[in-house]
Image (cartoon, rainbow, N blue to C red; front, top):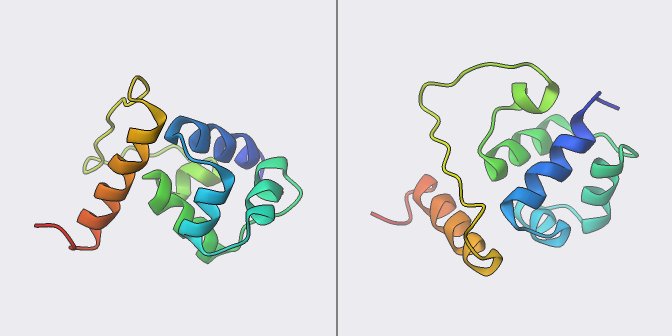
Length: 102
């Protein structure tokens, strides 16, 4: 187990307004794996950590406990946006990253 990772994953998911099932679909694993990561019973593989970093818009270094500033990263507080609208925001950002929206 990577110290602090389970709590970070749980916190990031809750802040994003997504369910474990939503995360599982985005990173192509079953929901029980996401649950195991958040409980510290499973350790995500390197490719899975990378996928999680994309979903949560953070670095793998952050997930692993290394603090590092990223000058290209922008953080927006959407905590007051209703949960059903947060998913729309994340979907749009993902589409922009993939070049699907101009």
